Image (cartoon, rainbow, N blue to C red; front, side):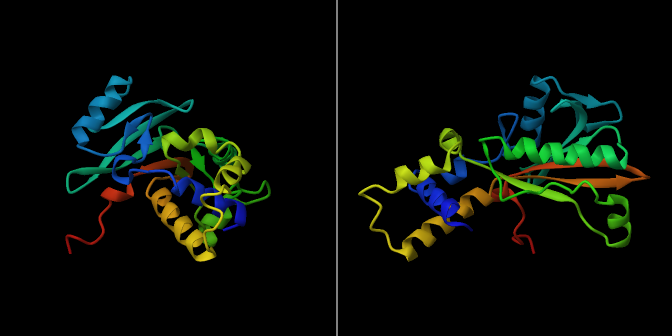
Length: 218
């Protein structure tokens, strides 16, 4: 982790995050609670049931027709999955994947860990078939009350380096950064390329890591 990002995370950690109340959101809907309630809220936004499967909703998201599934663990929602309703060819899916990377990367509500785009000369079909390569990108939702500050990392630094905090030891800084990273990593939004019968699809996951299974049922 570079120094600027570390200090930025430290500054963010100096503010209350209210972890259990600050969960991943999809279209403003918290990814938590019951499946029926999430479906009700999605329907209120215009999504409708597929004719052959009442557990899957369909509609438009980010300019594309998609199917949406709500996934639970112990009757608690931990994931909303968004899948392209129609497949694409190899070049189109590469463009879409890279477009999503850039959209998330320029969105102040998300933390990006670097360039995750696919190079123009990449042979996606060959790599997936021969080398079993997975094309995935991951981003992390930033607490809503901090998004205005993420537009400029230097602003983080200037506010962090004040009289109250400048005497923190390196150990304290790393500890605070680690705590903040843990909170961030509990709100991942990630997507991947999936291939099915020669066509390519983007699958997106809005995950609430607080509700994911951690072996408690074993």
